[in-house]
Length: 177
View 1 (cartoon, rainbow, N blue to C red):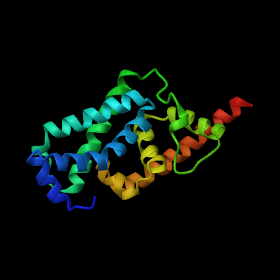
View 2: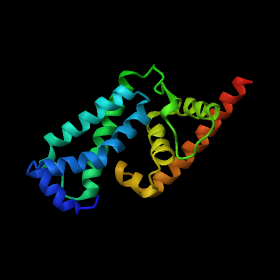
View 3: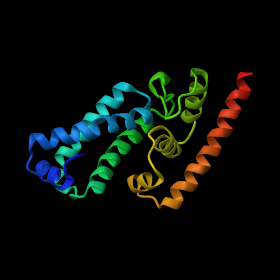
C-alpha cells in the first residue's frame, strides 16, 4: 500500500469510502486466493471473501491500528471460515478444479493434478501450511505472524508436511502404474 497504514486505518474507523476501497483493492484478491486454495471451490471463496470483509467492517473498532494486527485479523477470519467449511464437508474432496490452482512453479497438468490430489489428503492444518508457503508464497516469518506460531515451529512443520506430501504423492504414483 502506498499510503501509510495508520492513515488508512483512521479512515476505516471513520467509515471513509476511500479507505475501504484501498483495503478491498489491496486485500480482496489475497483473501480470495487463500480461501480458494484452502477449499478448492470458487463459489465458496467468493462468499468467504465477502464474509471476511463484512466481519471486518462490523468489528473494525476492535482491531488494533497496526498493519500486522489487521492482516492477522483478516487471515484469522478467512482461516476460521475455511476450517468451518472443511468440518462441514469432511468426506468431500476439497479440491474440485485444479486448473486454476497454479502454484509459483508451473508443472504440467498431470503433475499438478497429482500434487493437488496429495494436498487434498493432508490434514487441514498441514494443508494450510503448505498452501501458504508453496502456493501463496508467504515467508516463514509471515506464516508465523499470521498463524501466531513460533517461526521455528513453522519451519519444522512445513518440512514435515513436505515429507508427508512427498510420501503421499509417491503412493499415488504407485497406484497409477
